[in-house]
Amino acid sequence: MPVSPDQLLAEILHQHQAKSILLIGNTTLPALQQYLSANTGVTQYCRPTLDSTDLTDFPDRFDLCLITDDLNKLDKAKGTELIGGIRNRLCHHIYLFLPLAQQAATDQWQVGDLFALGLKRVAEFKRPIDANDGETENPTAVLSCFAYQIENYIKKRDWNNARYWANPENFGKYWW
Image 1 (spheres, one colour):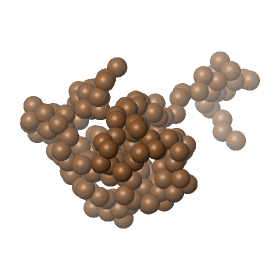
Image 2 (tube, rainbow, N blue to C red):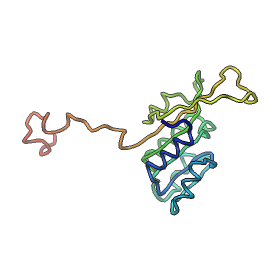
Image 3 (cartoon, rainbow, N blue to C red):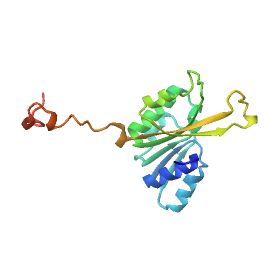
């Protein structure tokens, strides 16, 4: 299990061996910079912010999409449209790194909002908050990593085959 977000990102990049990466948010990710320097020919598109209307600007699909905590700058409705648009149009592998508050207000991202978009929690990282950050009630912040992978989104149904069919010899022949 990775002990830092950077180690997790390095494992993700090594696992996927992506040839095209869409990065939304912070562009100074050390693991990503190492991956790009070690793998020539990888295309990277960086956008500090992105709106769901900008999704039609891209000519092709991406192998991997990384979204950093800049998603908190968008309101939840626009963020939901953005993630849904990326998932449906641009990329089948999305990794979202987002700090979640323990007692989130209704206008902030909550775990249930991300689950509703088909994302699964991969890891959580706790880090102490600097005294200058202005947060004194919660001494640690939680950075969560969520993932969407089309291969794992819908499980193959075991019952939808000839073995469980009333007339197995007619399975796949007739549709009503």
